[in-house]
Length: 168
Length: 360
Image 1 (tube, rainbow over the protein chains, first blue to last red):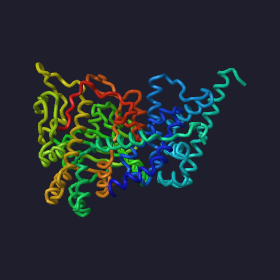
Image 2 (cartoon, each protein chain N blue to C red):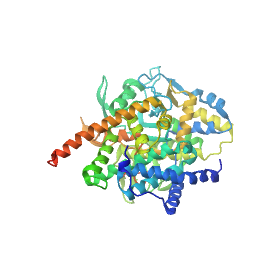
Image 3 (tube, rainbow over the protein chains, first blue to last red):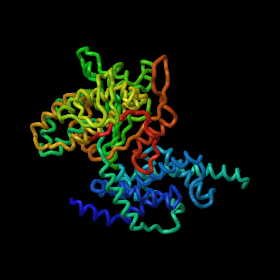
Image 4 (cartoon, chains in turn green, cyan):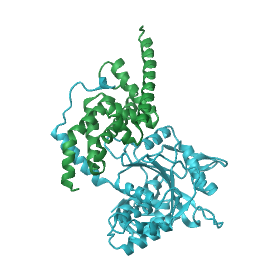
């Protein structure tokens, strides 16, 4: 494949891929300019490896964007001592994001990969299974377990925050 | 599922963004070097040349295979973790059956290949790491191979870091040094003159071409000194500086090998034969898989990780112990995240007093 045609194909898919990267990053970071930075870096890495990954570019972009966003959050929390990230009311939107991030980092690798591709990247079950080299059944199972873990932590945190705020 | 977390405003990339993506992408491509065990990298050249698989197989006959119990078997298509061991070959291979004392472990490097992201993650393990050794009590990790061979080393690394290891590749430094001579030496530059009297190394400041012996001495060097104009000052970073030097040497070696003219099959074949005689791999890693890994390594960018360690004196010995954050570093290595070379990297600065050369 010539350099020219490889680049063209990237151009054609750029808008779609950068949208995927931005969405995954924004869901974790809750900040426009941070998410744009991450999306830009994710797409730059995609471009630098285009020939090798264009066959599975969408899931690749989602994973790279997710990892970059998580790195950024880690740096942020180290610098600022766990201040809640994200716009919107700190109790509803902020807690969701923080919990999502904590959950992702605590999950076993396989479950995490499935959640990232399915719910940050909006990949289908079939595509996720193909990319991870497993069956659709396994993908369903990991997603189910991961979400169950998330709901449990959400419920715990909700009741904690309610009692903290003297509510219900 | 998480749509409520989405940006309420639609996102449209600017033309400027697209341009910056391309510019940075091109820079990443240029910067990419395959830093790795030079011995394994050489097989990529042969595999990629017209010589073909048959030649590779025959020339790789010299590779010694050993049974290493305790390795795990990953699913096909899943990421695999390899323990790469560089030994001081002075006293014979680690698995010799004739009573020759085993070699000392000089370098330990974990490499993780993820086929779905084409990423290769590296995690060096400092040779002075203090670990608990099954059946032998606590010791430095570089002693473990001598105590119980590759199996005990694999078990100890896997147990200490909480990971599973799928393959084992061992090479002795002589192999790396032999390559240095075969490719006409390696040009490296130091800011000042350096020496290591114990290793018999003396290099001028600036760029010089190191031959095989000098490369070997540099890779081994533990008492490197730099001349500051008036005095010889020691490199106090000890093991950490050494690891960085080794990685620079290996990366430069591979880059140089990669730029050689490989059209002469006879010269290439003899080079490969020379090198494969110094290679020991586990019996589960056949030649085809080995070449495949080497190809992947040479074609990817490597993501470097680091174990957070602290100096400690234990019974009069100067060792390193794992610090808080080690589990996190290992899990980043396994996940293939946290690229230290990108602008969003959150890496610590490398040891400030390390004396590290650059290719020239």
